[in-house]
Length: 94
Image 1 (cartoon, one colour):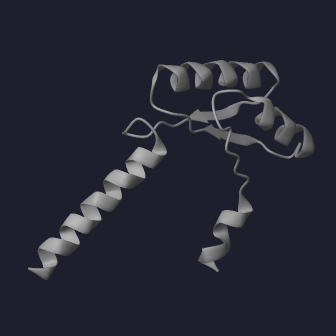
Image 2 (cartoon, rainbow, N blue to C red):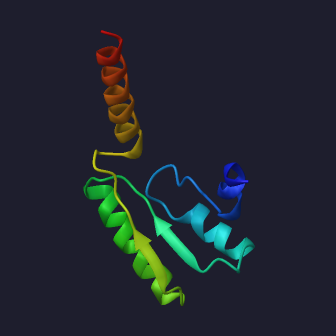
């Protein structure tokens, strides 16, 4: 079902800005064609995403996308969404 749709895609947390884990994943899974880089929305994250995208293009990958959260990172974005949901729930209880 839809709850298993996430299993159709590979996901990888870089744990920073180094591309080592990504390069290892691409070696193990040569069938990957689309790569979405979701790094932090700060100078280091944006710089790393551009550098990694350039490296991937030089390796022959063409479907490379860069996505950034509205906040500094995706955890901050999730916290903001949670806060909004909690505020709305409190308003509905009143």
